[in-house]
Amino acid sequence: MSSPTEDPPTAVDEIDTDGLSPAVVASLGSVALALYFYYVRGDKQRGQFVGFWPVTILALASYFKIEEIKQALADGDD
Image 1 (cartoon, one colour):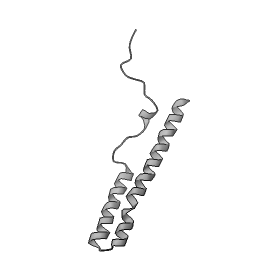
Image 2 (tube, helix red, strand yellow):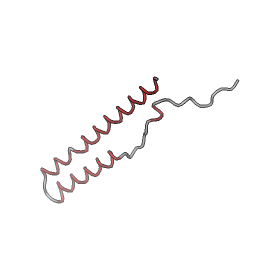
Image 3 (cartoon, rainbow, N blue to C red):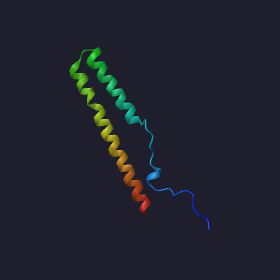
Image 4 (spheres, rainbow, N blue to C red):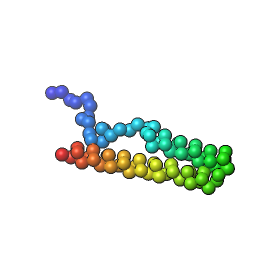
């Protein structure tokens, strides 16, 4: 009569949880580029335009991560 020492892996455990994903790197680069345009080049309109990119990049990354989790959960139900 052995008791398991670990819980069996679940579908959600298989999801990649790296903190510094390509989307985060792209967002940080976009912020740096926006600051460069705004302050260094003096092109405030372009700096503000590029400054909106991180939100869009991170929103798309979140959408794809949620779809990955949904797929993993659906595969785990089978």
